[in-house]
Image 1 (spheres, helix red, strand yellow):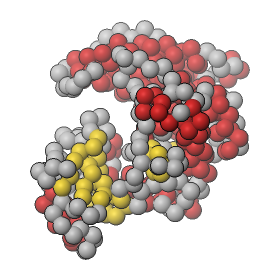
Image 2 (cartoon, helix red, strand yellow):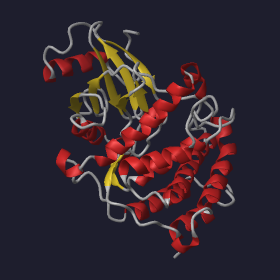
Image 3 (cartoon, helix red, strand yellow):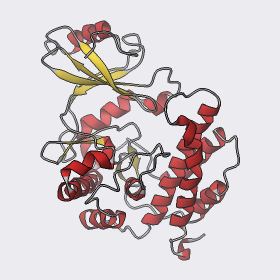
Image 4 (cartoon, one colour):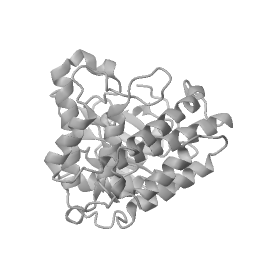
Length: 346
């Protein structure tokens, strides 16, 4: 690790803060490395040579505080620590932007691997891969089984009208980055509104639940669920639909969306949905709506990245190809939604 300050993290100021708030935690000079960055909150691995921790802060130049709320992310992880959901232990929250230039929190470093591609899973063999992906579903069942009130998260979101607000929110995001024709995307948005399902009882929703947002331990069990920045109280089937959508994706050299589907032993999306239904007892008959909504949401996210790229606001490998894959997600969303029974219309 470099002892130099990585972008966005002043190690001297961090050390002084930790010495005040967590006396005795740090025993020597800190070094750090940025382990994740770009489109979401920034994650740093920090060590004094003996202890190891993780620091999370908003992206550099962030402007939407609500989209990068460190206190919110810290709160949900802390609340889940004594449940069946594996999360890191939180150690400190700092909302004073004077310390490192932005709010941040510190948590324990959990050993594990975030499997992002089929190539990473391939050496494990089909049986281990299958077990890992099925455990991902079981952990989602455990998350959705947590009673929000019992862990102090009863006011963590507004479940009433959740799906309607989600549709409006992503429709506004689309409008904000619209600078070209995208055949079918307005039809998909409107059809999602017409076929809106009745939500089950609300639960703690992760918001971006997939294999590369968890750490898998050496025993192939889920060691920690990470990246809670989109968590809230709402319709739990949005997490299932997103997981099903990611599990349908085939690997493609021109797609910015990582996928593990082609790894030998990887379960089919239908099996993941059935396992969730068996573990949770929830009705999943309308899961096609949630999967189609996940396609729509990702199409909007990718179009936003493409829009910023055309304005010269985003640089990096692969950004020039993102615009080409957006129509594929629109088409997949419309195809998925068309499998729903028409009795849900209106």
